[in-house]
Image 1 (cartoon, rainbow, N blue to C red):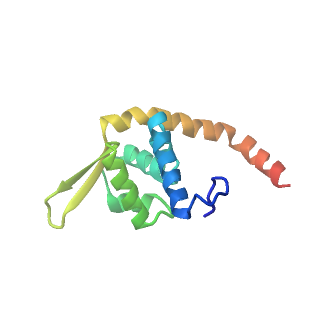
Image 2: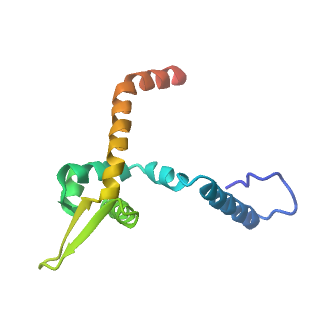
Image 3: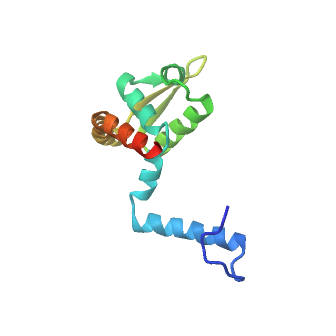
Length: 138
């Protein structure tokens, strides 16, 4: 990775990385939405949230079968992050074998209308966006 700071004998690569990390922290302090926007940029987070909301409560394997091309590892990571943030609830049942179900929390339900609006915007503007991309690539 190239250091974005001006060339200087005073900046080592490790110093550059430390400064970049501090800048990211400052961005988060300045804009409280930054971590959520970063999270929303995850390829699978919104897909998983919507799938859970459509079928709740839902189990891991059911989600895995209903989301084409997501790996088990990535699905597990996304579920963990959504649960950590309080967007979904992970409920473990002491059955044999153990059973885990996922559902959307009240906080997650406040996010769903915004996700739906974003999905609708994407559907309404898909053709225009694809046309714009084609024009740029041609």
